[in-house]
Length: 150
Image (cartoon, rainbow, N blue to C red; front, side, top):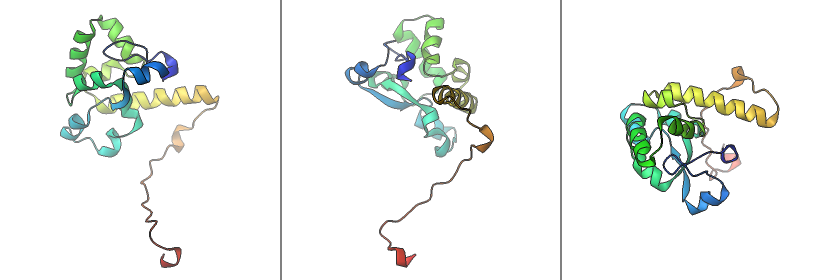
């Protein structure tokens, strides 16, 4: 995403390799953990790359654990940008403003997943078959058990 003119939601500064370090950019949840837990969103759904994006620590503090509809209004006010400019900043993260202002986690999730898959397809020059995308449970492997004990 840093190659696609992605901007911080608060400062509107382009996130690139130099600002990544100078602005203390980190990967943060778009729908905050506290909000997801309060709204009974399963951890496997909200704690994944689809719900994460690079943001400055300062931006993340304003996001807090609030619903997107609440924290986006605060961010837009602090950023001092128009609605159109702010929506463009969100879109630079492949985040649809419509789902965010409605606090629609699954609408957001499915839309962003598809857009990210399309970016991957463009980058690799190949189609990714959607019908073969299967969620798998992780398998715990205890490395302390010897092969002969299995």
